Image (cartoon, rainbow over all chains, first blue to last red; front, side, top):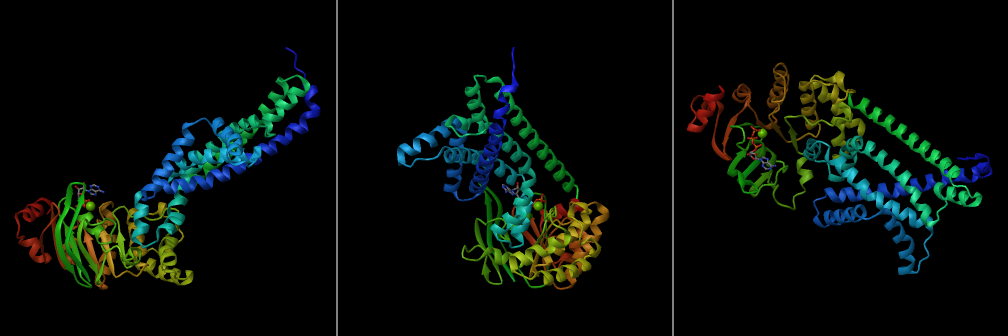
Length: 221
Length: 240
Ligand SMILES: Nc1ncnc2c1ncn2[C@@H]1O[C@H](COP(=O)(O)OP(=O)(O)OP(=O)(O)O)[C@@H](O)[C@H]1O
Ligand SMILES: [Mg+2]
């Protein structure tokens, strides 16, 4: 066993830049996933059958196939079909955003359906229109059920984001590989970015626990 | 003001309401009583379309609620409803519970809505609770807030579904007192209740439901002393 961390020192700024790339990627994918996931969740609870079917089929497809296959499909298949030369970052954001939308839509649907049916009835009985009721009465209460599960999804997404290294997005993971190839040593750079991933996930979990505690307190009101 | 014509309601093959017809006049207080599962809640919930009737008509001031062209949320704004389990909005303060629907559904300005809300809270004896959240109130207080919330919409008609059944015995009176005041003020009320004392004292008319059939209706004095049907007699014997 001979570890030599001295050799990676010059590469540390290069690898640290990967944090920014990974975070940016996760954030954009999450925003796409959240917006689309909310729409899909509303489709799922809607009384309009075709919307139910669409959302259910969508979820089934994205949860039923490997994420890496979805990623490859966006990266390689879109240029082949349309001639549009899609950038690695954009295809990664699309694949991850559309994929997490499937998971997030399930989280939001479950969160909405966990809100007492009486809340809907009370709002309807008062003559509050559906949209207003969803926005002001149901979704704010559903958030309590949704946020903790959503934090888990963020953590999963952060870790899984390492997959984008396979289509040469220069994220943390990819940078570790680049450095490894440069210095002919893989263990040190991998260990280094592994630590960074762990710190990021640890930070996210801590935030998650804080939010959960907050929600519990306001529950006792 | 309300006219129910040949109302029937099925859940799947289970006919819960069968061919019910009746009329309720403005200012009248009607109590619906009957055994558990006889369809009282379903009947009440048809009156604001929380349940969609299978057949028949419900006319409120000549607007047919079962007509799909009737803007149902506009009609509901004129019909207050009080539930057994309150269903206050837990993430809003008491005052916000009262001002929410007037502001959002009727477009009333905040200061106006708040002034009205404070008047109503005073009326139900809960002025000091306006900043509290529902979670911190007792059952009786919650139900009084729920009544005030419904009244904040200035409804023409109030529906109550067993408003005191979920309450501890010592809190029943404070809610019934609010309802009595409301009845005296001339509000049209339909009250599903197991409180025979209230039905006898406050109601102008009793509707007796049994297995989804409106078996008997009459004035309380008559109904409670000389029920016309065997079923009603059996029911009264059991609970009185
Ligand atoms: N959403 C529903 N789906 C299917 N069946 C229902 C539904 N709501 C009520 N029922 C059935 O309809 C019948 C009448 O119910 P309802 O709640 O109107 O009775 P109730 O007179 O209010 O009884 P209680 O005194 O117990 O409140 C019952 O047999 C009940 O099981
Ligand atoms: Mg009932």
